[in-house]
Length: 120
Image (tube, rainbow, N blue to C red; front, side, top):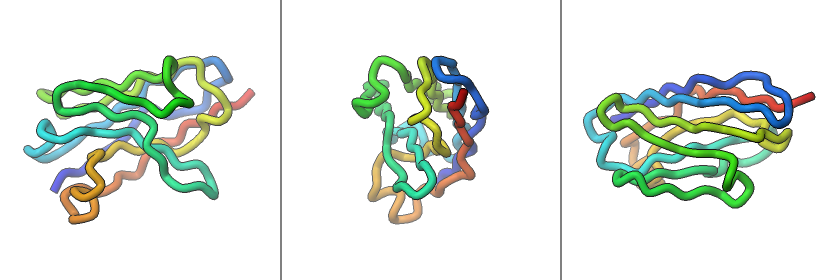
């Protein structure tokens, strides 16, 4: 089983930046695509950025050009650089395996997440 611990969230003004970090445990980490997810109050948890084991990336349209996902397999870390933040980015951010089947079968578990609040 692989577990994750997110950090780096906080309160920022619109247009500001944050860098989120995700520390992973487990030897299987480097073989899986990773994703950053976010969940706002009253809404479902959605994937916003993903990175493959070969470092290919993809983003939901609403964050393209503003967010950058990266990973360091040696350190078992995943990062999300968030620039030009908007109030709509306010949510709890989580990292996890992007593979939903792997998550569903218990290979990974959700961490506590880190709160990102964008407000003036």
